[in-house]
Length: 396
Ligand code: PMP
Ligand code: GLN
Image 1: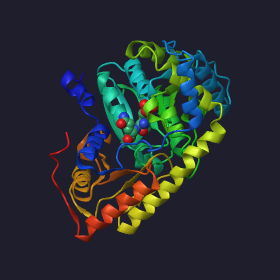
Image 2: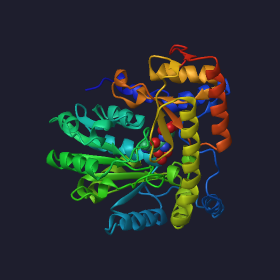
Image 3: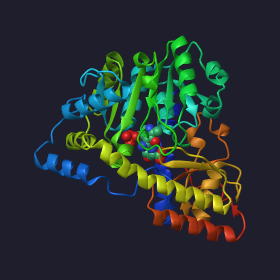
Image 4: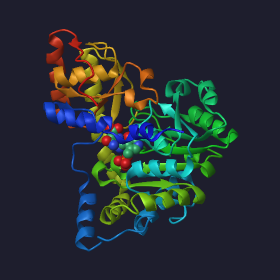
């Protein structure tokens, strides 16, 4: 079992909070933490104002307000080609983050293991450790290349859960049918539960997203998690949901009752309203991001960074060969201090940070003028030759 001090590693300042703080301190361009710098769809904002004024300001039921559960059941039921019961198959959470934490607390005991695909969003590692369990990393790249051996080898008699994230943060990769089938096969053979984080499902620029919950045989063992944060560009609202078979949803909801009891009533009602118009709103959120991805990727490539193609989401990974830095952590600090551009190092996405590759993450969820200013600063900094490492002292 992990001692409390070890579990508390997930309770310090996250890398996203830390780098946003650094951006404020240095007055740097913040291409780190994933949030759009736009207002969000006015339909959703107006619906929230109406809900507040109408007096919808008391506790929601622990499963979430009924209109939102109904919307999620109907829309995701159609996506999965099955009828979902708004009460039994859907539960609303305070962002996808709470769904992830609740699932790990509900399903993992001290001494258990949970497999994550690395790089893995930091909240999985923290939630798994908070439950007293141990995250076991499997390189996402091996799975995308069609190699199943690493995933099979990671599963032991102590494994209870596989955490999957597609579209993926930080790479922007989408798991194709072959990778999804491999996960399904391994999970079924070892009778494992799967947490499938699909928060970027509507922000797909190349290729097609397929939910793990729709892979034959997976519905009964998979909890699918999504969020209004990414779909509508409303990260500060913290409205997310989990859907799946009745038993899994019930277990997650019972944890949610003691974590937050319920999320913000007026915001849940506003998200229900926005989902009513998702076909019109999703492209309004997605298409500017597509253009911003192109602007950032082209700009970084012109400067000489090698960019890993990103199909979806907010992020793109690149190498940092233009910098004199040994680690991702050092590279991100050097960029922040010397160029005035904040990125995210990838060490926090690894159960064992020493295994992190030489990559850094850039967010393109920023207005074109912000991205252009970041590129201008990088160009200026690189005129003086390779950007020098500043060490790793300033990051906690
Ligand atoms: N999962 C992934 C992969 C994320 O990038 C994020 C960050 N937004 C979350 C979950 C958390 O979502 P929310 O803000 O809805 O809690
Ligand atoms: N998901 C966002 C990212 O990856 C951050 C959310 C957060 O700060 N918790 O940057």
